[in-house]
Image (cartoon, rainbow, N blue to C red; front, top):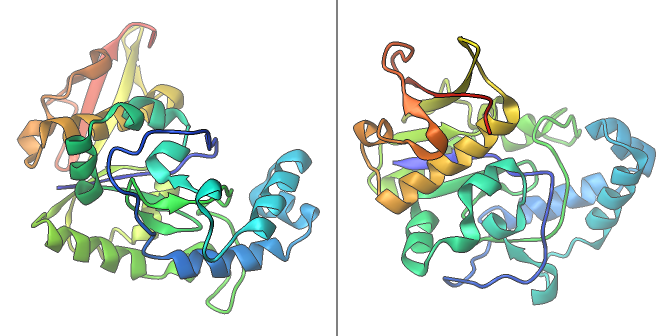
Length: 259
């Protein structure tokens, strides 16, 4: 079983312990090429490309123009420790021990607009480039065109390496689309996390993202390799709802206001 999560816009490049040896991203050359393409845009171009503020575009431009093909140790950090958004608050990668992180290296993947497909300990440089960005290149009009079916093929190869035939989709639609799921030759299981608000079940983005990270952590710590094991997830007060689930869509619900 492989678990796939999205990256985060918020980054933390402060010092962090390294439970296992860091690794080089498989698509490092693509990251360099994309950083050159994006770095050639001016601030206004980046602002429009990613629909972000001028201040964020200035930061992004600086990162792209500082991007190195062979970065020094001071400018990189393992992906699972560098991303700091809601999903990563649930994953809590910094508190995984060496055995858990070693397992995550084989069974957890992070989708990235710039780096394609990352292992938790792959070293990344600061960047901002959403997968849905329409960054034109010789391969097409968007990052989906850039990556084509290469991420799906890479994930399938990695699944064969660990003898997995299931991928647990804990990523957003924007990122999971890059795997071309209709053509992916793995069974896809998608956990859905909902809040019960006055008898109405609804998805609240902030809590759902954190729960996806917590599910990834649960899988890592418990070495889950069967769908039945996913149903035991109960962190944060969530409980599996068989009557709301259907096929490969597993619904988890919790009561209250999400606090």
